[in-house]
Length: 233
Image (cartoon, rainbow, N blue to C red; front, side, top):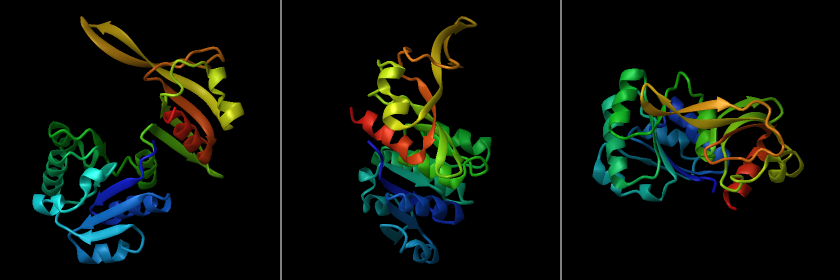
């Protein structure tokens, strides 16, 4: 099911772009920032905006964070506030906590406290981040002209165990399956490891497996429709 309720904590330039792009796509966005001017700037673009210090656990508990599909922590220079906010959100039980880091040192700290999705503004363009938030199946995508894209999609459950021909990428969804990335279990240096390899041009009778990553080309709406239909099966 497509995610549609998000909290964005910190609505400076980066957080503002993520929040506004999510809202443009029809998501219900709750924006939070301790700076009243920033909240004033975004309040008409999102469903809910409030001045709030996210490092205050009681303030966080006063909001419905447990009902959100994800919370994006986009606090700027104050990394201590980012860490404390993430700890609180994880304690509250937020489904997905996505945090902003600058550099490998900050990334390591966030990983240690349990944050699994980490944004690096230098590498993650805000509108790409919002697309991945809206569709958790999308691993990455390349936006092309005329609302087309090349997307890497974790195989939706409705595709697993079916052949490529049966799924009907081209006939049913007007998309092209470019290739498949598949995980293989190997033993390396005496340890069990997982490696991902590209299959090449997949044949129509190939069966899609659990954990396959499908690389597809098509209109953005076609990709969204494909994910939505096959995740609901």
